[in-house]
Image 1 (cartoon, rainbow, N blue to C red):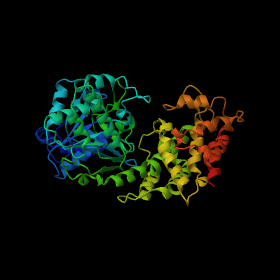
Image 2 (cartoon, rainbow, N blue to C red):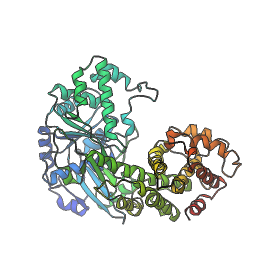
Image 3 (cartoon, rainbow, N blue to C red):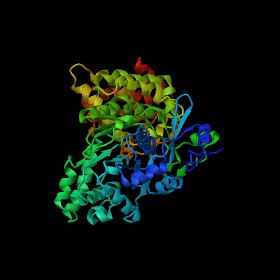
Length: 544
């Protein structure tokens, strides 16, 4: 028998069991009705990460007796997600945990009590505004990606979709930051009840960035006469509106065809992968890895359930910062970027294939254990060394996680300052550590620059073939700066072309020419670019 998300799982328990799917121990209708009267949590960003992390946390809180209410979700960027992947399935989804041994753990998630697709200030908006006016609402979480917090261009000019909202006031706001600010204004007018606004997007200082964007939008509205100074005071007062920091970590790629086929064989009927007009990829299921972390600064002025009962770490601000820095500068993100860079060079189709290469595995072991751990501050809530071990031995090697070097390589120039620049800076400031001893970091930077040899967004693999490079705002500039250098060609100008790039503190966090690393990077680059088939040998030689 085939089961579907909208089936009565209580009446057909045996069919769900036979399909290998765990079902909730509560009545979704009762949860939905209770949530309508007692909302406590709403999330913005209805994509795959929400379905892999936040909705399961909400379900665990219900299962553990911490609350009778479910979670609400809203989508501002691509409301078609709600229409195509939520409403037809009673807002349910299947969480599919992909284990390294090839097995899967599937679980029906029915904790989403309602979903809102925001396109305009219409009836859907009115329903959402009602939730924000309710003093019982305790906190908001968001996963809208880092780009969703941007309101201006680098020159300070308002982005074209933000300017009408800044000039038009709360009634015109439909972007993530505009809509959330307008909904906070609704809450303010209804009595100014406190609330926590929790960014769970995957970048450092996310709460501070969230606060800055909300306050900037409110400031424009105040300047244009739409809101009073008392609303500004409200969003600036952490006793009223807090913006906790967080660290989130769970590899959740786009839904995979292989997972869809596996689920169909097991007896699950809702397996079609949905591609929205805005090119969002969603499905009635969300495939993800087993390991996950969510650390949140415990700053909830309107209260909260005991989130630790669902696996969330609650900590003070310094601890959250330390956990985040551990992840993004040492124990995960730098390894991901190194593997993705060399995976692109060597033509590996998946991240698991990259770390299966013994030379690349040795590279990231050096990068994490030898070069990274000496400068990590232990957050105390979990072990950096154990976190690193999970990444190298369990998480990245998992062949069932359909993640690719191309996805991880996106915007590499924007990631290097954090993923490598922070560690470089700590070495340069240390009285006991020698920046000249670093090997894996300069190898990775040299490999990245070698990959860029080419033009018009095309790079060159180790075998000399052309590869389409992942998007990066600095790509065109960097390829222009490297123009004239080719694989196996004349590298006489390599020094002159590379040094201006290495001087760019916006990319590396410092002028690398003033460090022992520039000569190393240039030397490795020359070896990589000397001909085809050089990558593995160059890395192996450097790591001896």
